[in-house]
Image (cartoon, rainbow, N blue to C red; front, side, top):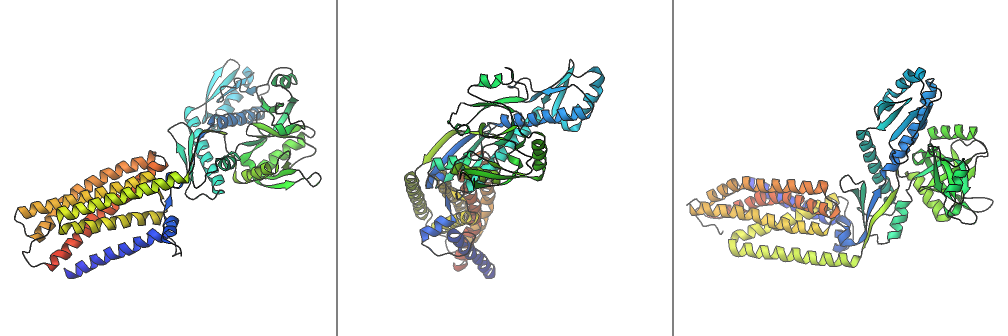
Length: 537
């Protein structure tokens, strides 16, 4: 018995030492600094405690769907031509229905060939194909669209995460917000300059290079006049930015081919440079091998024509193709900051769809400091009140409960330091709730022991039966609460997740302290008592 008790005591002491180390040093090597600095380095504070910026973004996923169908229009036109279907016209007739492609002018002689192309897996797996007079209608399948929108949203999150990392934010929260709304939640603790955040995120907007077929013109109607007054289905009108013309007119319009020659994912790298003749800021870019081949084929066949760089759905610069371009080029008409941001964007990848800001909130550090102070006061006051009650009501056994309670708190904070978890204001509430759950477990055990003593059991038998009968109840209550916390973590946002994390860690620690630690302390006390000596409880 003595040897077994010594082994269990060693486990408890080792646990206390290890998790105390994690509180101050996390999972790294020991560092020098004040206690406050060590705690701050190992346990990160959330947005509501440290202050920072809260953003909710809307991802316009329909743009990515439109870009995909635009690409499929050009691909299908080429595939039909290769199959010998002459005269067929592939287009999207209704700009508002971005997921519908129309195939017209298919003769009776070419029907079998066209059907063979459309029945290929590259189209039939993505689109529902329906026959119409002299042609077909391809409608993107609902499942395919949902998968594409989900991919666009996740790609946007990862791209924004790469850009936010350049700000040096510790423990940023970047995740899907809402259910099915294609929104992103961003919480950046310690960053109070909203403009800095906007610039970093917005610099990841979509960038594409399109062929220019009309313009510039002062109005959209004038731009259409360059094409005879009507807009072909495979073209689009895009407004030019103020830097397009020397006069700085932001109302210039261009008619561009809808399908981009190259887009953001085709860029391999970029660097800000200066024009050696004028000193103007530019962005030099390199394309991937596949995109370089496509760009070379296009520029070789279209020398003298214009191409436009479209950023954030606006024409940023227009250039004439002087010679074939293979896998590198220069984007002109940028300020120094724009050249730097664009270069960084092209290196890290652009968003698959544009974004807009639904909510921007800056939380000041003074609010965070007040929250920390009040939260800590509440936790300390609650813990002291509970410890005093346990001592008063359960006498000597109350010391047992208080020691287990302190160790529970040490393990909880050690877990957070080890995993680098973020402490939020709801997280502090989770700590307080954990204290209550820990006391509840001890009350269940102590009351059961009291019942056994009232039935005339010896102290050692009463302790053994008390723990044995209370064990099942403790497990039931903790498992159900952990399941609830898991649901909060899966579907909640940053602060709610902080509450779920601290509550879960605290409950797991409580199972260890309430059962293993308390039982060890009781056994140590009983080992020193004479047979039949009363138990203080």
